[in-house]
Amino acid sequence: MSASSAIRVGIIGGSGLYQMPELTGVEEVKVDTPFGPPSDSFVVGTLEGERVAFLPRHGRGHRLTPTEVPFRANIYAMKLLGVESILSASAVGSLQEKYAPLDMVIPDQFFDRTRGRVKESTFFGEGIVAHVSFAHPVCARLGVVLEESCRVADVKAHRGGTYLCMEGPAFSTVAESNVYRSWGMDIIGMTNLQEAKLAREAEICYATLALVTDYDCWHPGHDAVSVETVVEYLNKNVRNAQIILREAVKRVKTADRDCKCGSALRHAIFTAPDLWPEATTKKLDAIIKKYQT
Image 1: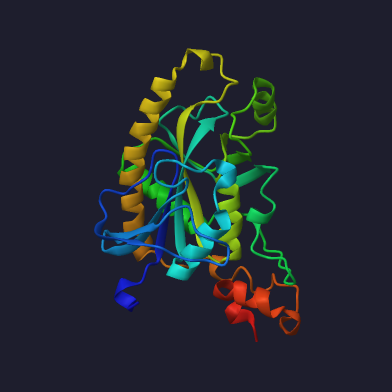
Image 2: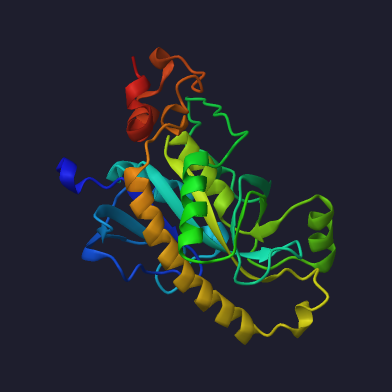
């Protein structure tokens, strides 16, 4: 792939966001990974003069539950394509009154309440141990890009906050929702924590654009919200997200990559290279090759 056609930006679309209509010169690209197939073929095209790889998180037609999403394959495939920055769009519920339906949230923290995704939360194991720094799980540079892009799109956005990632696929009970609120959580979703962890291990910048579709079940008016209303909000949010992501791609293109995401593994791999099993080394080639010596 020539430098002019290099894919540096990846977009992961969540519930409702299955395409980016503004992409031009579109082609479908299937990527094989050591972790199996990604959620779907990538849609690769040009957006604001930048080559972009778009992936529907749940597959086209929404075929995968949050627990079934092949997170490792998705992020590893992005790495194989040359992606340096991932913009992830995700539908969420609000745990606080100030985050209203149709608002956008750019969280800077995650809280893990998943239970069945141990293997899908790290690339490492099988003879190679790594412990990446994850105190600040979101790339601040991309957070700024998304915040500025929301302003251009004239969308009410909130910078910062904690995304609680639950297992799903069922939504919370009222008791759970109230506990999460008492912990100070801000929004709730089912997917982005694993993506953020794996992107950090793959040394890819990562940030979430969270699309608020409804208040979680803690809210007194929750029972008055119909499924039709939630779907209407989701559809409106999706179009707003497409506008924001287009602007974000333009800004990513011109922003210096002055963060530490690209060197996250420099001091994180604990296993000496001469002890790396051959099979695991080959499996993780795309992310550890530069640290083999």
